[in-house]
Image 1: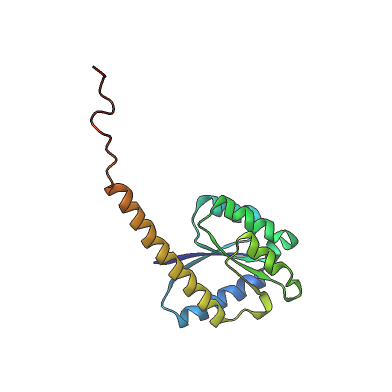
Image 2: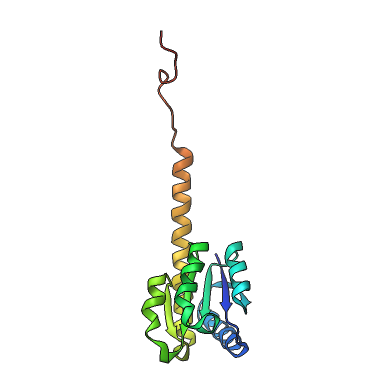
Length: 158
């Protein structure tokens, strides 16, 4: 199962850091990850609406103090999305807000490292596997259950 990962950051240095962390993390895990970048909120929203990403790593710089509201908007537009918020160390008060808005995880950007990132990817991968199994199970239930009405239900009364 491939993880379709989107790095949402307007900052080139952050993009380079995230690409480097991903490369290192993939050395630790046997996951298949396709990573893309969005550098504006408009690009991010277009991708979310198109349902082409599974996980968004959302940099604080995309919306700053409005990051919790952006998380909520992204999830309203695509409830299947998983969001990891990157916050500045000095803005820890936003951790609870992004979590309450629906982010799966948040971390101070200054504390990111490859083992944390590989763990997050592994957790996301396991969650996606379980969701796929549950979806298949319930899909199978709805296709095998017969919804028959009694023969007399629609017969004309004599």
